[in-house]
Picture 1 (spheres, one colour):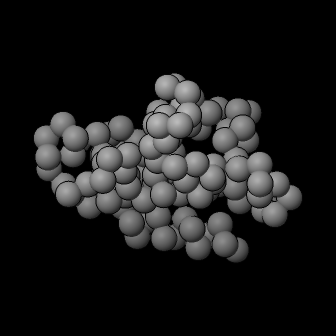
Picture 2 (cartoon, rainbow, N blue to C red; picture 1 turned 180 degrees about the vertical axis):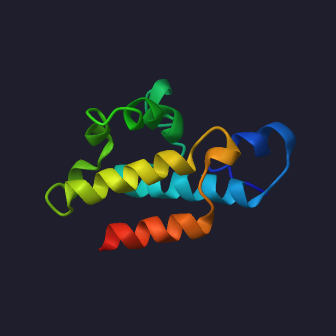
Length: 115
């Protein structure tokens, strides 16, 4: 059973759970790591309570994506690696399950980012 904030849209709509739902959940965890925010945070303004919904507008723009990075980590990471991780998170969080990578592809992408 999926946890609120990590559940893929198709799981919420149909109850079906596939490997692509797990990829979506991993994308949420990756986004939490990049932003320092929780998947769901009722203490934030209403438009920022759902991390994925809030971040989508930034993930779509190479220029704006840097705004999502956790300020507490500034200077502790390579911007190129962070951008690559944000791109991977965006792919994992695709609305369409068929557009998400499989976990083997996720692992390869992470290994590539690691160098």
